[in-house]
Image (cartoon, rainbow, N blue to C red; front, side):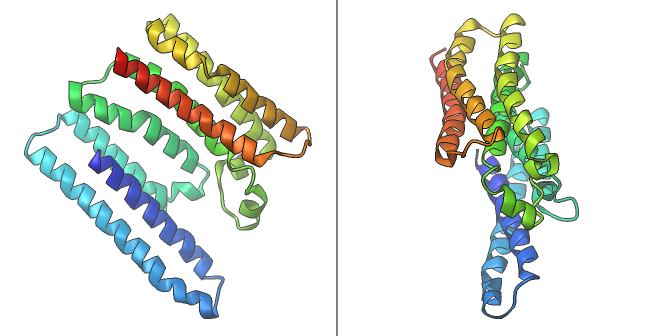
Length: 248
């Protein structure tokens, strides 16, 4: 857990440094006084990255983790690095949201499971992939409000790369795809006790899609409601999955 938090923390700090570095090129005068803050972001990010590297090295040397867990942890580290650091910097290529959703909803649970069991289980993907779709839809929904400013500042979010029409359509497909994937998982062996609690969030998902369709049709957006709905869909889905697994 400490390793995952350090990787996410370092990736976010380094991203913040390079984001502000790009803005720094366009400013002069008093705004340049923020240079120390940017340097602090970079230094804190490098320290966190170094701590994560030392932590996984110690665990491998002491044989506290299996090979599969070590490979997945290294993958998380590499993805976190390429997410924020040039020249790859996936966050500026339209892949940032996809990387975040995959890391949080798939990769970190896989690391946790393999550290406890030593291998992967097919039910793990059945549980996590619907959450991945919902988390990606959440990020798309919340990238609509700053769409104009992101476009102006050449910030290449997934919504910018796709265009607002295709991005909104993808959002709706992702929400529906989450429940479709869950249904397929139930057919192929996911226990019903894990399936039906997540289906309770379906009305919330449909309400989010309805809001998105209204925005696409030109109705004045209710941004706070959209943010609340998309957030609650993620929180409720994650909570119901976790609680169901806890109680067996």
